[in-house]
Structure formats: structure tokens, C-alpha cells
Amino acid sequence: MVHAPARPLAGAPPVRINLYSDTQTRPTAAMKEAMMRAELGDEQHGDDPTVHALCDRMAALMGKEAAMFLPSGTMCNVIAILTHCGKGDEVVAHETSHILHSEGGAHAAFTGVQIMPLKGARGMFSADDVRAAIRPKTRYAPPQRLLEVEQTANIGGGAVWPLAQLNAVAAVAHEQGWSTHMDGARLMNACIAAGIAPRDMVASYDSVWLDFTKGLGAPLGAVLCGSAEFIGAAWRWKQRLGGSMRQAGICAAACLHALDHHVDRLAEDHANAKALARGLSQIPGVVVEEPDTNLVFFDVKEAGVDAAAVQQRLLMQGVAVSGLGGRLRACTHLDVTAPMIEEAIGLIREAVAG
Ligand SMILES: *Cc1c(COP(=O)(O)O)cnc(C)c1O
Image (cartoon, rainbow, N blue to C red; front, side, top):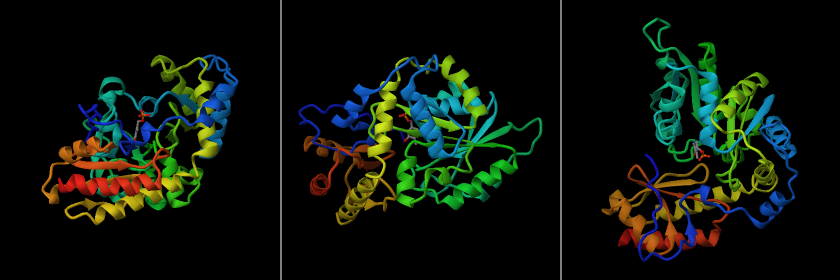
């Protein structure tokens, strides 16, 4: 389920159409200008004005009391779990979740929690699934402390949890006295696709973070939000892990620029993803999931061809896609245009045909 890294392929031309991941966007000229103009201070010391501006804005956007700027989404998940849980506690999460598969074993290495993997279509589960996961509160069972969801669900195909379902699973967790955490790596994609304001989307979650390096196109940065008490406690872990920074405002400025200029345009990425899925669905032997957002997963097994072979043939044509668990994934983002999608459909057709 982990990304195979995009190794440069001997003899392959430079990548022209990069559908590998929305993490590969380059900062725009305007974003770089905003970074150059940023007022800076010492973030670790609490006096970088641009980081403060970003955190205030994110707290307001998410309807939470406080926010904290971190280098990456992975560090947001690690710090959130360290703050909510103690060693030996249990986190209930989907079996395809990023915390289980793509954080290098961070939760075993640093947080000491165990993760109970729940099943469910498209990276989501129901309130009944959570009820079925409740353990007796005995000295034998691991103490359950946290429910974690991903909005959008990455390996679930970029699926958008319906708001009612997000609230229903959180309600079961809260009834049990657990906290709730949302991995919002692509939260803005979900909000734009569903037409729901972020603060409403995350209202049932005690902590939530947004990644600025996915569809929002910043070079680094993620912001973790929660109560003032939670963020206060999280600061201890940020310091311990070396996530406290210095003139981080230069990066926070890119994130502020992304909030101003790269959120509404996510709708274009979703339209491009839908166009790509429609085109792929017409290729014999290709089975494609209808995307909710910007991730298009497709399977080429029925065409009698190996996914890795298709991926390599595409690289020889200057098109990058990623391979995940035997399927291929194409991801739209701000460096991918509608004409590129049309061209990619034709090249994928040829690559599948051999
Ligand atoms: C990318 C991603 C992360 C990790 O974010 P980084 O900024 O790459 O550390 C976590 N969860 C999900 C669902 C992701 O897609």
C-alpha cells in the first residue's frame, strides 16, 4: 500500500505530465514572491509574525482555539497521537490509514500506541463498526483513547466522508470518552467537493490538521489545530521532536498564499480527475473508480497487463503515475491542465494496449 518511489527510469525523457502525486507541485512565482516579502522572527521563541498570522487564520478557519505550524503532516499525526495518548493506548483507525502504512512505523517507534484497523469500503467505516470495536474496560484490554479518520481517505480513492458519517463515528468515540483526530492532509479537497465549510466539516474532531504540500502547492508545512490546552501540550512534543523552527515565516507565507489563491481552484483538479476517470473507463480492460476529488485509482488487471509495466511505459512517454497495492493512481493538481489530461488518456490507452 506504500508508494513505490518514482525512480528515474534509464532512457526515459523528463516527466511532462506529472500525475504521480499532488506533493510534486512546484511553488508558483507569486508564491515565491510572497515568501520573499514575509516578515520573519524566531518561531521557536514565539515571535515570527507570519507564523502567528497563519496559525490565527487556521484556528479561525477550523473553528478551533489554537493552531501550531509544523514541517509536515506526518509530524502532525505523530504529535497529535503523542498528545492524546500514552504508551500502550489504542487508536481506532481505518485499515488503509496513513498512520498504519506510510509513517515509517512512527507510532510504534515514538508514540507506543497500538492501532486497531477497521474495515470499510473506500477508507471509511460506520458508527456500527466503531461500536463493534469497543473493548471492555478491564485490566486486560488496551485502553482505547482515540478515533482517527482521514478526510479525504487517500487509499480509499480520495473519498469524501459524508458529514453525517463523520459526526456519527465521532459521537460513538466521545460516548466512550475517547478523543477524535482528523488527518486532514487533503481536507480542503473534501470541503470544496462537498461544499461544506472547514469549521463545519471538522466540528466533531478534537484535533485536525491540514497539509499545505498536497493540492495547496506549498513547498513545506502543515498546521495542527485544536483546543488551547491541546496545542499547549502539543508544543512540548514539537520541541522534543525538533519540530520547533526559526524563521519559519518564509514557509508560513507560502501557506497563507495557498489559502488565498489555491483553495477554490481545487474544483479544477476535481473536474480534471473526473475527465480522466471518464476517459480511462472507455479503455478496454481498465477498471476505474469514480473519483470524489483529485485521486483516480485504476486497475489494469483485466487488460492482462502488469500495472508496473504500464507505469514504466508511461514514464517512457513522459507521464508519471504512482503504483499502490497493485493498482495505479493518477493525481491531479495545480501543475496539471485539462489538455494534459486529454493527452494522458491517449497515452494510457497505448500503454495498456502494449
Ligand atoms: C501525505 C499524507 C500524510 C503525511 O503528510 P506529509 O506532509 O507528507 O508528512 C498523512 N496522511 C495522509 C492521508 C496523506 O495523504
